[in-house]
Amino acid sequence: MKIGFLTSGGDCQGLNAALRGVAKTLFDAVPYVEIYGIQGGYRGLIDCNWRKMEMHEFSGILREGGTILGTSRQPYKTIRDADDSSNVDRLTTMVKNYHSECLDALVILGGNGTHKTAYALSQYGINIVTLPKTIDNDLHGTDYSFGFDSAVAKATDVIDTLHSTAAAHGRVFVCELMGRKAGWVALYAGIAGGADVILLPEIPYMFESVLEVIEKRNKIGKNFSIIAIAEGAVTKDSVDQPKKRERKAGDISPGMELVRQIDEMLKQDVRLVIPGHFQRGGDPTPTDRVFCSRLGAMAGELVLKRKFGYMVALQGNSIGAIALSEVAGKLKTVPLDCEVLKQARLLGISLGE
Ligand code: F6P
Image (cartoon, rainbow, N blue to C red; front, side, top):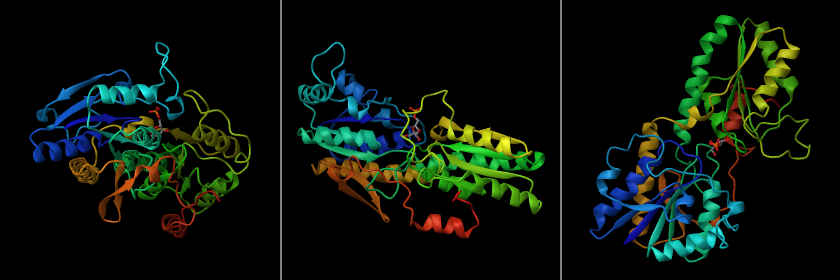
């Protein structure tokens, strides 16, 4: 069996742990397995950039952040375009390269965009098993995706640390967390870190509500406030405005905008903290390591059983599998009627409503 491994999209903690899990399962089960590490995500499949890997290369990486294979973003909307030097589109090139290398299957680790391409490849007859990776936790079909727990741990650490300096100076801190379309990281880290306000893309917020919380806290002698805002949060006023182009580095972010407004309205000092890619770096948490190992083992088992066209997933307390057709193109945002939101409100956390 010749199996290609690739990691695609933004990296996160646990990619190596998951790769190790699949490799261990495959190498332990059959002596005739060959693993090909495809470098830099789908780009490596387009460019035939791969190499045969030995079992020892998957040793000692359980706790390593990043990915030993490298990764890249190859937007789904461009996979039917050709590279400049070619007149064949990228999807066709990937299918051709898979066959010319005589691969039996691909094991693909990725998030939403990755799954759209994986499904497209599977529709061309490529044998695929995928693993759900994204700190954003916005992949449909799995209760959690790996990387999320580690990102929440990092983000919580930032909010925890801000408390003492915020209290010392009597300041408002706005902490902008990752999550453009789904606010899972801000919601969980906000609760875990004891934020006073949590602002999510799913619940357009009113600036007046945020001000009210800060003022109320000041009145009862709590001279500092902490606001966790997801990078995709929007105000109620702006939600109906036509969608702007995708945000670029250097643009005013929602956190910056909120700080500007607070500064304009209040006499109190306000500061912005953006942990950014800090949330995606470093070691996976023990929970993510266990999760990735379990997902890896299940993915390996599916390959051995030749059960292709599935993503391995957490369903309740079990690791199961869900068809790629059910996953591709579906975003899992924070449901407005979910218990966590209800409980956050009961805890007195403002969601800016
Ligand atoms: O999709 C994961 C994610 O970390 C998002 O939360 C964030 O908006 C984005 O990736 C950042 O992307 P990049 O690494 O390309 O800057």
